[in-house]
Amino acid sequence: MPLSSAPLEAVALVSNWWDEINDSTRWQDGIFFTLCAAYALVSSVALVLLFSLSSFFMLSIQLIRIELRVPEYGWTTQKVFHLMNFIVNGVRAIVFGLHKLIFVMHPKVLTLVLLDLPGLLFFSTYTLLVLFWAEIYHQARSLPTDKLRIFYVSVNASVYFIQVCIWIYLWIDDNSVVEFIGKIFIAVVSFIAALGFLLYGGRLFFMLRRFPIESKGRRKKLHEVGSVTAICFTCFLIRCFVVVLSAFDTDASLDVLDHPVLNFIYYLVVEILPSALVLYILRKLPPRRISAQYHPIR
Image (cartoon, rainbow, N blue to C red):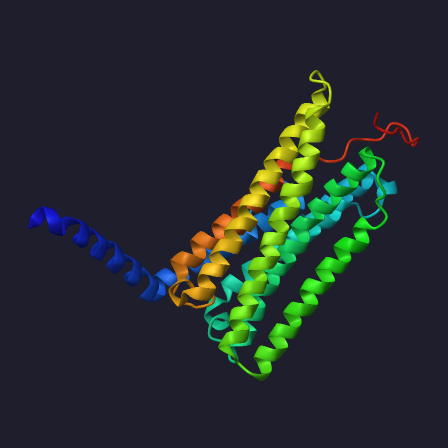
């Protein structure tokens, strides 16, 4: 009897621990404030490319550093990427800092907007890398690139339009079926992002592998593209799986106040760690330009 009941007692102990944390106001505050601090840190890193909590005021400094290095580029992909990371993580930090107000808003659609909108901005931010890699790949293959940016803008505009329509419907009629459709839609968007990284990240990675072995730049870019592709593909795929799970199982819901542990694990895995790792990998500033003449890559 003691041996047979041991596993059941262990399960009961874990279940009680989980329920105790989820039902504790102190644990909820601690976990959500921890998420707030983590997002604030990543938001700062996005601006100054240094791990510092006190770097919010250095937004202009980071952008000026890049602008002085390559002034003729204007707003490059790198600048937009850093700025959008700052916005996404900054909004998340504010949302979790005000979690006591956010999770109890009425109507419930307001909570969904404040939780889902940063996720859509995260999608736009990181698919910007897919666009950048697609342009590089098409240029290297002598393929047309003029429609890639139009396609990127069209896809993002369609995603935001559909999501806004879902929010408006939920505002008018808080329908559980439409809320379910909204979660499935977020999962589909995340799956599309994962496929984008797999497609163009994989293509660019294998193209770089065919460069000369002795090329130092080839090794760095190979590591950069491979690492970012693996990180972003994994995080969007996990997001897709968890959102689908939460659509079918209310115990896995992420838009309630009494699931702090689940929220912490989810946002840590799909946003905080990926953002921190990608910002670290892409921390290098553009090289100084010696000549204004364009030199195509052979």
